[in-house]
Image (cartoon, rainbow, N blue to C red):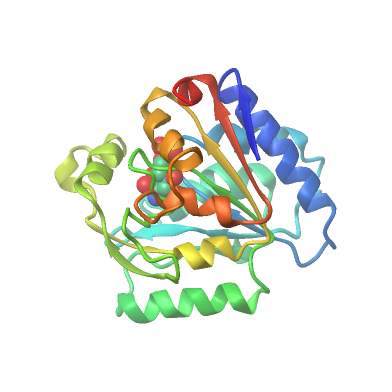
Length: 240
Ligand code: GLP
C-alpha cells in the first residue's frame, strides 16, 4: 500500500496513526516495535509521542534495525543514543526494554548472531518502522544483499557514507561497517511501516514501487510483504 501526502509532517502524522493503531490492537505487555534511525522517521516519532497518552506505551519493547561498528552506545551519534533521544525518552519507555546491536563488540560476527536470536527470543517484531536510503537500502542492507539475509556485519557503500556524513564532522569519521538486521529479518516483522520523504529519495522510491522486485533495490523487497504500507511525500513521489 502506497500513501502519498503533501510533506514530511503529514507523512509522520499518518504513519504514526498507523503504528499506534497497530500497537493498540495487540495485547499489552508483549508488544515489540522495530525502530529505524535517520531523518525520515523523526516526524513520525514526534507524532507518535503526541498520540501517546500518559504511559500508554510503557510496556513497549523497541528493537533497532542496525548500529554502526566502532561507535559506543553513549556517543550521541550512535543509533543507540539516537533511539534513546527520539523514542525511548519521549515515549517514556523502560531503557531495559531497548534492543540495539552493540557498537563496540568483542566479536562482531558473534554479536550479530546473538542479536538475531534476541529478536526471536522476544517473539519477533510486531510493527517495524523503516526508512529508505538514497540507494534503496533498508537498515544497512546495501543493494545486492541477499533476500535471505539475517543479522550480520556489513560494509557500507560510499554513497551511504557520503549521505550519513552530515551526522559526523567529516566523511572520514563515518564508520565503514555496521551490524544490520538482514532483509529476511526485516521482512519477518508482522507489519511494516515505511516512511520516505524528500526529492533525494525520488529514484529510490521509483525503484522500490515500480521497478522490479530485486535485491538491486532492497526496499523493493517490501512488495513481497503481506502487510506493508509506504508513506511518501510529494517530493519523493514526483517521478512515480
Ligand atoms: C541510514 C540507516 C537507515 C536509514 C537511512 C536513511 O543509512 N541505516 O536505516 O533508513 O539511513 O536515512 P535518512 O532517513 O536520514 O535519509
